[in-house]
Amino acid sequence: MRKVVADGKFPIGLGGEHLVSLAPIKVMAEKYPDLVIVHIDAHTDLREEMEGEQLSHSAIIRRALDYVKPENVYQFGIRSGLKEEFQFARENLHLYKFGVIEPLEACLEELKGRPVYVTYDIDAIDPAFAPGTGTAEPGGITSAEALQSIYMLSQLNVVGFDLVEVAPVLDPSERTQILASKMIREVILTMVK
Image (cartoon, rainbow, N blue to C red; front, side):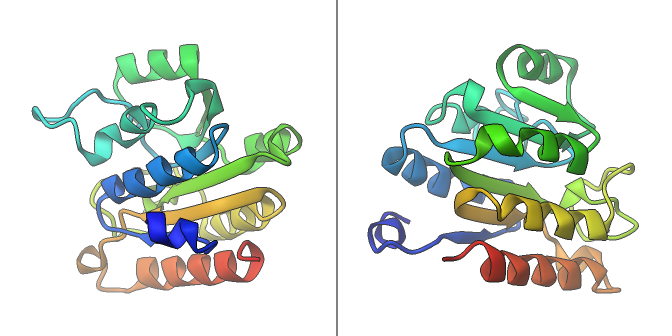
């Protein structure tokens, strides 16, 4: 990741496990000390640990706070987490529960000009549109809203992007994979300069 960034390339991460976001976040924070994380997800991902493991998909944003100031983390679409995670988010981060489009639109002006790393968990999208994920959570955004959020984010100085928690084996219809591919295509077309 350091080589990718040193070469001036735009990192795009793809996952499975949301933990794959940690390395690019760390490297981008080294390059941009005022890095902003835009986290679009169904879950808070703020646990200290899960089943004794601090390095877990449910702790990725908590681990990212080792490199990024809490006030530089913006969470959208969140609709699941522990009580303690929600309390921590309300007290330390910018937490926008349930919605993505309206709160993101409200934040665009304050985020303009700042270096932004986007970590996008496919489970932010309702399982009716993207069932191929390990922790599907009803009540998410539509596939159209997911694409709209990418177009909105492209107005910002996005310095890196990842799309995670895509699990093709859990979606024989291939809806999730098709949507994930379309999202990455739109990121390449709109964000990579």
